[in-house]
Amino acid sequence: MADAQQAVLSYGTYMVLRKPLLFWLRWGGLLAGWVETALMAQSIASTIPSHRVLLYVVMSAGAILYGFLFVNNISLRVNLAPQRERWILAQLFLGTLLNLELMNLSAICVPFCVPVHRRIRWFWITTGFSLAGYIYFIIIFRNKVHPPLSQILHSPSFSLVLIIILDYCGNLFWHVLSFVIGCVIFELARRQQQLAVANQELIDLQAEIRAAAKVEERFRLSRELHDAAGHYLTSLSIQLEIAQHRATEAALPAITRAQLITRLLLAEIRESVSAWREDETVDISVALKRILRDVTGLQTHLEIEGNLVHIPSPVAHGLYRCAQEAVTNVLRHSEAKNLWIQLIQQDAIIQLSIKDDGCGCNELMEGNGLRGIQSRAEEMRGTLEFSSPVSGGFIVTLKVPTGEERTA
Image (tube, rainbow, N blue to C red; front, side, top):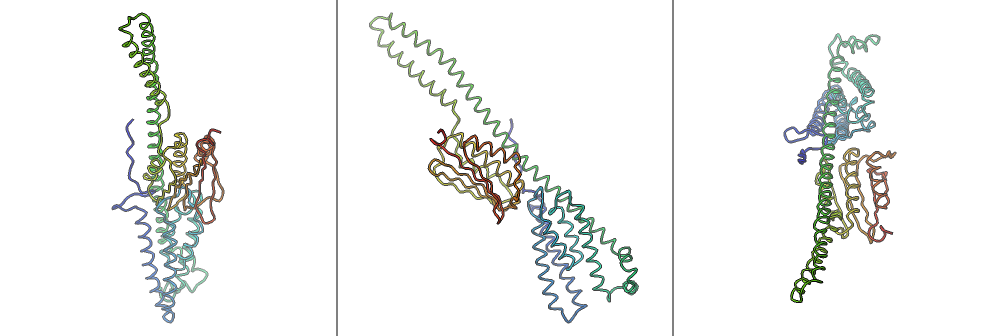
């Protein structure tokens, strides 16, 4: 089977001019938000000249905070089940106070912050904030608007309806367009993330198939060698034994040497057959480095302590698969920026820890991945622990006995 070509992917993004698409959306939106806030501060300051300096300071601080929320909500890695609704709520509130145009940027952030089944609800929430902000700014600039509109504003019974009909519908169009663009970009990023994960799983599956084929071929060769060559060498040894009893005195030394060579050759074939039927030794440190080498989109850290070259092959293989599955879970669900793998051998115990600084998990729901790790831990007679610290992140800790403790 041909090897799969692993695409060079930045996790959850498409590349534009050698930069991720979400990179441009994140920093371009941040810059646009600051510019819009600066322009709005200048416009408002012209209506309240006595508090111009204080207004600039307050709006600049609000713009910085809004920018922090916006950058946090447009993550360079897409979480398949986003849960940042409080963040988007704070962003909407600031956008309402600072500039109406910022509400369109907030609408782009909605798909990155809320689950799919709550998108429409949050769209209407953002629309409500946008309308409130529109009315708020109309009131602020009521003395600078066109005279007919100024007269309408002084007529409370008709102002809200006429604002929506005459002017707000245009802004609502851009608001809807921004929301749709956010959904499209999120879906593009999510599909690419799923493609990256599926691609890695395909590579891992092909590696398993090659390893299984290699083991099968070794077993077949060892069986053929044992059944064919072993059979003929055993027959040859018997024939030499018969010849020794019937040979003359001069031929006995040569027959004896032939018997010795036959026994040595038969012993070597049996040793080779036994060796071929055993699992090959796995260097777990090299395997873990290979896992981290294929990880994209976050910083990786590997710490190894102890002599792990000669640990039993089943243990090394089991640890490798557990680490592989844990890393896959981090990439799929954690939204982390850093990933740590720690492998320590103390006496006859090997401890494997996989930690991330992602969103963590308040209520653990074991999927196929975690159940697979649990199953491998039981097969290796080890212990498995899951924890999610208050500070964030998720930790998988696996302790496996080796040597005498394992066979006890």
